Amino acid sequence: MNILERLVGAVAMIASLLGGGITKALAQDVRVETLSERHALVRVDGGGRYLLLPVQESAPEATVNVLADTRKERDFTVRLAMDKVDYLVPLDLGGLAGRKVILDINLRPREGRGTAAQIDWKALKLSDVFEPEGHETYRPLYHFAPDYGWMNDPNGMVYKDGEWHLFFQYNPFGSQWGNMTWGHAVTRDLVSWKQIDNAIEPDPLGAIFSGSAVEDKENVSGFGAGAIVAMFTSAGQSQTQSIAYSVDGGRTFTKYAGNPVIVYDAPDFRDPKMFLDKGTGQWKVVIAAGQEVQFWTSKNLREWSYESSFGRTYGSHAGVWECPDLVRIGDKDVLIVNINPGGPAGGSATQYFVGKFDGHAFRPDEAPEVTRWMDHGKDHYATVTWSGAPDGRVVALAWMSNWEYAGAVPTKVFRSANSIPRDLSLVKSGNETILKSSPSPEMEALRGTPVRKKVSKSPMALFAEPHQAYELVIRFNIPKGKEASFTLRNDEGEKVEMTFDGAAGEFSMDRRASGETGFSKTFPTVTKAPTNAEGKTELRLFVDAASVEAFGEDFVMTNLVFPSTPYNRIYSNGVKADITIYPLAK
Ligand code: FRU
Image (cartoon, rainbow, N blue to C red; front, top):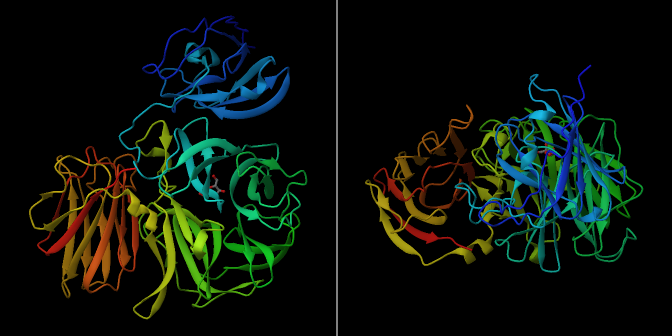
């Protein structure tokens, strides 16, 4: 038996200002008692809205049970700092005022190292405010990224009363995956995002995995006319689907007492995307089940019954199907299915099928062996669309990362950003019908004064001052049977080379020398897209602190890059091109 070692009152009064005056600490007692190698109790007496927890990503994981007057309120996992503090994350004590709060902390055994006594308890702080650490080199300027913490899939995207809601897979206790919660951000213009309070937190049915939200205008659910109804996967011992509703414009959600509302015996059964089927007037939901999707139907958003499955022999099956969506574009229906791994560039990617949904089942137009990718880059995943977008628009958003290395990218207090929003349409390319993603028109509002230049063989400055965020519109002729290439470069010689190969009918992006690439073996890579573009064409590039999104006439390619300084030059392989350069700023 271990000796019970007690460190009573280990943490003293905290009266210092932290992080350049951004965090106001209170003079309060936080008493720590370590009870065994793996177990500690932290008693928090008194005020302070937040308990700031020090995180070290390489530290062993601890499970924290939050007790108030001895009742368990919640639990979560966190890697409490031992040797160094990477950053602080806040535990909101707001709802527990006046109650005796105890954090019951259990270290999980990992690599046999780390004891409760080694935790840097002195770094625990009570504070009335929490401001995440400021600027990081790779924090995007015009893409949404959480203020702090880990983000993956966009969830519950719904447009209501002029507001675009973005919920997202979120870990509020560290910038690695875990504690899946629906974070929440809103925008009125699709470019200025504001992260607000988390919307849906884990419960005894499980963590809150991906899902969707709709506006129940007719009050078929009985939750209230205009309620936002969200459906998500409760990821517990099994994956089941649950719902929650909001009658205050998405600010707060109430979980439905009858959860879960859809159960099915399959290990991977998740990511419900609801939509209103105009033909039958019924609500439908498409759910990923292993390597196919299922359609379920409902009249009231609460009771659901199974209708059909699709996909067993269709498209790519090199990984698990996740995050499906069904959208109507013109007189066609497009089924979007994300798949991981098995993408064209390795790892995560988004495939789609064009066809018809007859109100009960989906029938594709093309043969089973045809696989179509929505984006040919390596960082475009979990793509889904907004419910209720205005003017019949179909607007999609992707998580701009890849499960191969999402946890290793060189950011610190936050991890991952989303793509820019994209309007979807169906277009002809050669004699095929393809799903085209175009930058949403709102992106143009970010444009500063344009500069027009002619690209040449020698590197040419884009701006007088280095800009981290810009859009380039490159107009040129693809020489018949030859290559046209454009290279972005910085002062360090780091570069991203983009090539149209006229002979192969291919566009490629080479990020092998783009900057920091060593954090994952699969990051340095050349991604390729088929293209039928020939002759006069246009390439639009959206560059931000850590990404390049290339929009051609019949392809899109989204890739992360981590240059040590911004790319501030461009040159071609001799092909003459006209470029318009727009600095982008919010
Ligand atoms: C896709 C995914 C979903 C799941 C979520 C969990 O990236 O694996 O299938 O709901 O992430 O965070």
